[in-house]
Picture: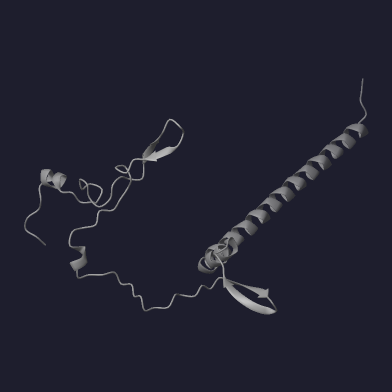
Length: 159
């Protein structure tokens, strides 16, 4: 832990990100136009507005390098398709498809899938029970009306 802390005015002056550095590594935040439309309708790029990365000085003498080797063979894709050509079966790489993504998601979130299915079953059961209760209540009301009507017709009316 250091004994000295920079003051608030000092912190305000420190440029902490690449976007705060004047003419630093990255120009812009991906907004605004990169040129203008000419009178004939074509688009003219203004190269001063184009986002560029400024390469730091003496980068070729820099000791640290990214952890990427050129001696490694390309990683084989697990997404392949087989086609038959001239009587031979050829395996080709293919792009990740929506079904692959859903299968991956379900494998990673199996508990969530089970919980969702349980909640859907519970909701369906609750809806069925509610409909059944409403039907029972309706039948009970109909039965009481019929009894009341029968009771009224049996009582003689005096005048």
